[in-house]
Amino acid sequence: MKMNISVNTKLYAVIGDPIAQSLSPQLHNGIFAANDMDAVYFPIAVKSRDLEKLIQGFRLMNFGGFNITKPHKIEIIKYLDGLDPLAEKIGAVNTVVCRDGKMIGYNTDGFGFIKSIEKKLGQQSKEELTLLILGCGGAVKSVAMALADGGIKKVIIANRTFEKALELTTQINENWPGKAQAISMEESELKKAIAEAAVIVNGTSLGMADAPEKTPLAKSLLKKELLVYDMIYSPPMTQLLKDAKAIGAQTENGLEMLLYQGLLAFELWTGIFPDPELGKKLLEEGIG
Image (spheres, rainbow, N blue to C red):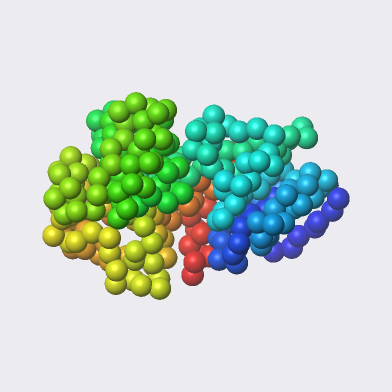
């Protein structure tokens, strides 16, 4: 791909530590090229101690925006000029828009998740939808709050450390009363939640490429009426998804969540919502 970079080229980036594994440059540079846009997107590894200096540098350059990944999604907030209301409630930012001398933070993770399950849920009303989410990490928090903000019936959070699940559900219920419930990972508790839920989401690291045989949920607890969703996208078929597929349940991995959170970031920066088919092809090429 030939690039003509000039003083007018709009700059975009993803910052984190580590950052080499990010697929965002593959996605955004491919979309810029497809739309013949004078822009470039690159990864920047930055330690927490240098984050403020990096952001000050961005302010002096022709930046249109940037993404943030671990471990800076919370710390970045202190260096911004403002937050989108949902990002403020979540308390974490993964996208920043640079415009008119201001840096405004957003969180697109929840949108990415919601868009990624829409087709699988069909005509099911979100007001009647209950989800069980396993884990309590940053992505789970963003997704759970976006779901509550979007008007779902309830999100049930299960975590090995019950106190962490309770802390998260308390935060959710402070903003959206009655939308969240915390449970332990005891089998009896999980059975009750699964009987109530239409979707199970793995938000833990169990099943990632370094330990693909691990699963957060016993196969005996699954049922074919469920949509079983794993935020992990590498490997594309985790043990949890294999177990769910074996009993006839619908399955989905985290690739489309990654896709749609990126597409919304692109729209926030440029006003253009890219073709999802192109975006998915670019991500699959990056994984390949």
